Length: 224
Figure: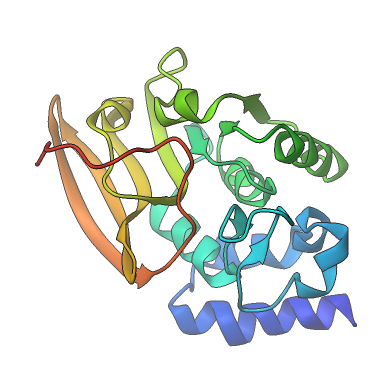
């Protein structure tokens, strides 16, 4: 496989058609080595339009999301160099690396020790030094990182029934939170923006299906 040709085709055939047209995002996707974050046994899948499983013994478990989904989230979040980011669900570390190239610092939470270690090593190999990988329990991850709050950006890298108010409260005013919300057979990527002390706007981005985030239980009755 010609890696650079595959990377070019990924951008032109998968990402651009999904309305990802921000030149800075496209340039980053063309330079950051996605293949370095893929488990070695699945490296041939690095540029395909599909989710890549990260754990062999957990069907439906953590995965790398499709390149077009990662790219679209990055574009919609409009991360700036002075901003602090929280990611819940580190997985391979690739989304953290994308965010880190746009942000001041990224804190990312992972409940599987093997994935946390894999992400740390991949980030280090690629010279991404402004990411802190926190190994936490699933329950701790669902609470976010209040000790480092408030955040400019929060990304939930898996699905949940609804976004807990406690996570929305960890946003600065004007901060953005991206999440995949809903139940099978369809879920929605949504962008929440904090507009006041206890107020958030909500934008529906696109429909998709992604693995559920560990640690997030049944929906509460909280409503906006």
